[in-house]
Length: 336
Image (tube, rainbow, N blue to C red; front, side, top):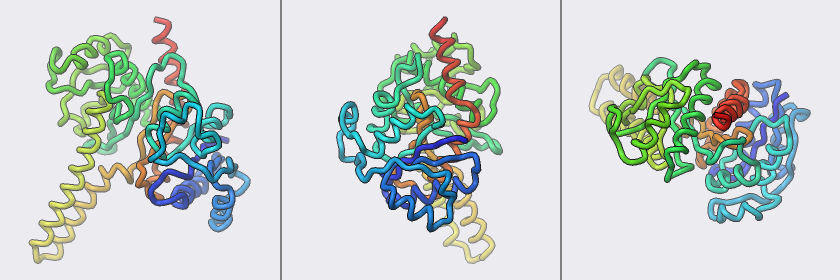
């Protein structure tokens, strides 16, 4: 049986949304145990209401949690007994735990994962990775870092490439994933100091580094992994979301100009399809890579659908043995 710890707090839509989404996944996965970090009375009432299997539900009972207004740095020694700290400590201490999910403060989750859970041996800095659909049917690209490390070093980009390589293999079964470095041109020697310094380091890795990629390559399906610093990665992610919203808006405005019912319906359907393919809040979550367990970080505005998608994403990475793959790769890197 696999265990996942769910921090019920931190989402804008309240803990009930998180609990409901998690219980939906529990009903689908008979090999799963959910450990809820939060108010036991609230969770157990929903477990009973939904007719969930109570024998596969455990509790880390607390009513206190870290808010987005709290200083993330206080998690070094403070916030004991909060849902986030209890979740992190459960990940550290329980070998059966595959990972955890929290919609809470990104800063607190990041620092807590480093200092309360611990990083895999050889990892210097974690990063946030997200999986985006490409225009290739069923294809995905792993974008990392998405915002955990805004000022990255060339050596950190090397680690990000290793993260992305293992993620693509664990989640999608891609052998020898194509790894690209985000840049302003495809030719070697292009870019700022970071890109120029990182390029030869990535080229020397025992991975399928295929060179520089530009922003318009991200969703084309020619790369499986896009490596960049957290500043540029976060901008790329938000821009992909904005393009989906803009396209839907244009389609809906065009639909209003047609009298034909068929034309209106086709345009509205097109807009919805584009939006649902790139509406990152519905697609899932970012995954914090580097900690000793998988950490799923959905958007603060997560819906029940988001929680379901995020937990499936986490379980997929667990089923694909992501942590053992990362541990093996970083051990080889350290022994070189």
